[in-house]
Image (cartoon, rainbow, N blue to C red; front, side, top):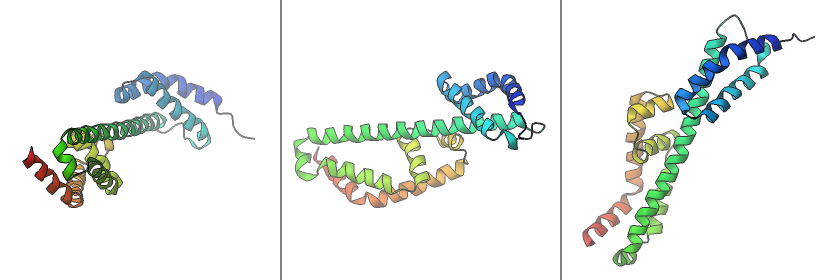
Length: 184
């Protein structure tokens, strides 16, 4: 027969739920998201209840699990928001080019948008995420390092690599854009 862990689980839940909810709120600043995070952590705990050593570090485990889930949610939010902002910025630039009759003859704005999107897509995943957070979302290296749980030096290395790759990939567009700037 399997041991009954329900009373121990109830005790852990009642002792920690409110504290964990407040901990999650410090990260996500939304009560519904915080409740979802804490509920997910307790669901995972219940699934692994037979493997848990209740005498050693259960509270530390719970806090770490909540922190990890909250940071993951923030990362996913930032990536989605950054992509939307990037597309809006691209479309805004595209509309500026469309508004200029002279530029239509020289370059198709859809080619520029496609080139930028392809260059972003070609970046390695972490490199792209850091680049977008930095250049499009405007986060500092320190903020990015904290959100992604990496060092500031790693953030700077990703930004340098992204810039180098983007410059190489978009070299032909830079020349066209410089010509357009001279026409205006």
